[in-house]
Length: 499
Ligand SMILES: Nc1ncnc2c1ncn2[C@@H]1O[C@H](COP(=O)(O)OP(=O)(O)OP(=O)(O)O)[C@@H](O)[C@H]1O
Ligand SMILES: [Mg+2]
Image 1 (cartoon, helix red, strand yellow):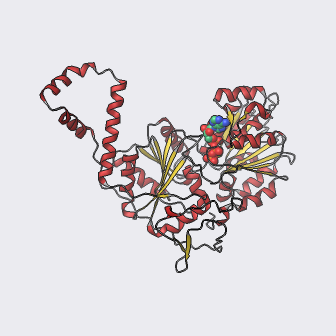
Image 2 (tube, rainbow, N blue to C red):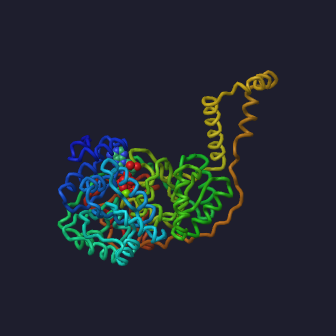
Image 3 (spheres, helix red, strand yellow):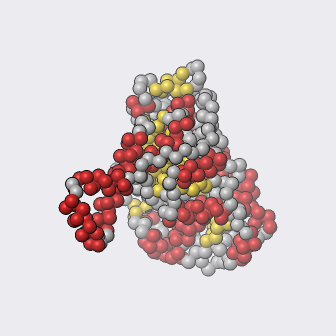
């Protein structure tokens, strides 16, 4: 049962309604429908909803609505874990605030601080920033937060992971206590609750009820593959699936650099992004990806949180993530705002236990897929050529080639002509040798918590000798009955690798 909620029924001001219309937002998403009215009543809130379901606007709309344009002071602050996210959130807030002419400023590390100080003098209404840099400005007294009425922690659990808790505490302590505090993420592991108890006043918890933690529009597969074959499998998949935009996640910075280089060697438009790159480089890589001048982004988990890039059709977990939360955020870069997506996870046979922990957390099984063969890759390439031919016929004026084509067909067998052209146009699967340093598989996982059979899926069986979960029969795809699981026992608690 889906009840449609119109934005005008949520008590939003006409000025903000105008912005939403301009953005093409018609109906509120469930998290928006459930949190906006509470937020307008100044309630503290913890909001959890699947990736790509509009949490930014869920906190952004009511915050903007409460901004007094006449007052030239900072009234709202958003704290986000990465620079990219700070920029993206500030852009979305700018759009939402357009009708009310709200001034939004993003401040983050790596950017010239003097420029930021000058920008702060322009009296923004809202600040979006990363914890370190915000605190830096507070200490320099170039940022005063005593008129802030709304504080938002986006991706709060990631900020905890990154060790920002003290910075956040320091920032919040310089904001008046009467403030409203909101906390949003797709995942809410246990430590978040402690954090909430410290910083919030009787927070209302709004969890959009969903059977699974991941969006059902994302088809999720896993492929069992030996480390040394991973790269060939990746390029074959890229050839077969021909994603519009793809993100490949690697475990380490070195891995990302090597993968980006290897993909480029084999003729893909790929670039890497990770925390060691300069801020300017990271932003330029992301821009190229958004514009489509590169179509494969290779990334560490730095890009896994919150990034909203439309057109990402495929996510490849070249290395399986260490913890299930990270999986949820990574694959959530696709299947956003109602679009479909595909997520493929490579697992080394020794890493099967991680697969099971992810599946138990998300309450969704991944379907097993066999690694594609060279022939299948070739077939994929051919199909791409055929599609391109059809597209060219549709789009271009080909009259210039007509005479030659007719002559060719008069002298040759038509099928032979097409065969020859296909052969010429089809990119043979590239096997250019590349250098990738081998990554060790993740250490065998031992679940410290006893395995509660009444709660999660019923197909796993503990193998005592090595702590792995073995599917009872066949592969994981045979498992069924996730419905028995108790959804309220948010399975995050199953994760014992909290970074
Ligand atoms: N009501 C709406 N109607 C149409 N599109 C919307 C609506 N709300 C948000 N969107 C769009 O959906 C996309 C995803 O939104 P957003 O980035 O806020 O998701 P999120 O829930 O924060 O995801 P994540 O957990 O990955 O951070 C954005 O492009 C946003 O503009
Ligand atoms: Mg978000």
